[in-house]
Image (cartoon, rainbow, N blue to C red; front, top):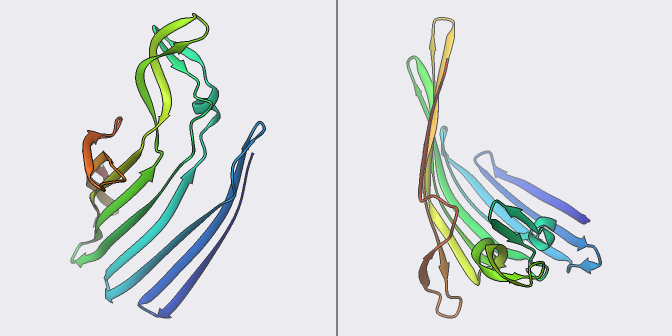
Length: 213
């Protein structure tokens, strides 16, 4: 069971300047395992420099209680096993972003371009790790995957998105897409330095291009 309550406040100081702030309280139960009551905060600001130019900044906290599958799933995928992890801990962290959005208008077409930089930090991040684990059913050790807590992790990078609309006769042609660079890595909380060990299941580079008519 998961219960939560959320509240958000939005303030427009001027027609160009807007602040937002919010708080969420949540608590989780899995069987008789009751998690603590968790408060989470977020805040953001958006400012219109010009009529079609906006800058923004945001900060938010995150928290995730392990899923039923991560704690208790025990199955086999071919010759590879999935082991339960009943003592895996919740993951928590925070993220921050700054960005700028620019509207584009010219004869025959219009659109926007959005550029942002992001950073997130995680403690006890949950990932499925491949290794050799005790297999109670076979009374031995077997290869497989098990949900485990990483000590700490960081994910930071940048993203560019765009959307262009051009009308040709009775047809609206829309071009959308973007590019994301991501650097996901573990770090040592004591020294504050990256370990050089990359997080699994993530791509450093991703891009998309879509055309609709």
